[in-house]
Length: 219
Image 1 (cartoon, rainbow, N blue to C red):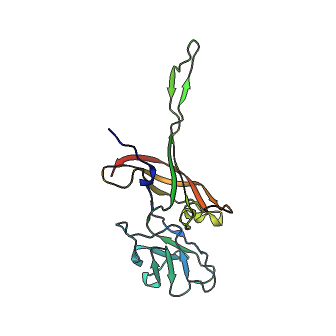
Image 2: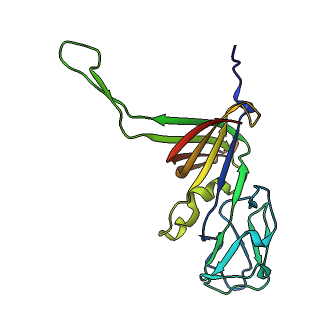
Image 3: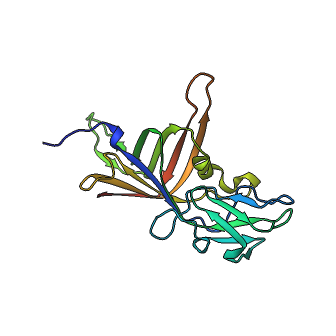
């Protein structure tokens, strides 16, 4: 017989590859050398956190920089130039990130098929059921610990002209353990982000994400 589990075994993973995403701290101020990726940690092609500058592409006013022009601290998504780019310079970064979201309190995965029943005279039962547009979404709440989730919501919108980044969400409701089920949500974007800062309780944040497709698999 199947066994039910409490949710504390679960885990939630976010993964993406932003392309020429404007850095946190851009446009640069005079003398500024430190900038950050919107999402972190920065990882290599194997998904491991990396400080290898060749794993990222950094642009200043759309000009690709040599990997020797800056240092990368992958765990923080930190880019530090050896020489300040200059006031008003736009810093963009192409990179990969993958992280297991910490301090998650709850996650809810929803697939809404928006079915519509058709009724006719003489019966209380539907004569037909038609499928509508499908909405795939995930919401989760966690204790606020860093800027990563906000990066999914804000990203390049600070200037009012940017777009929201797409990323992949992996939900392991019974843990990332061999034989257990998991769900992959593809091409997700942050629909709503909330930061809750009560006077006498834990500071928390929650996100509402909309995704293009979903697959189910086993670890």
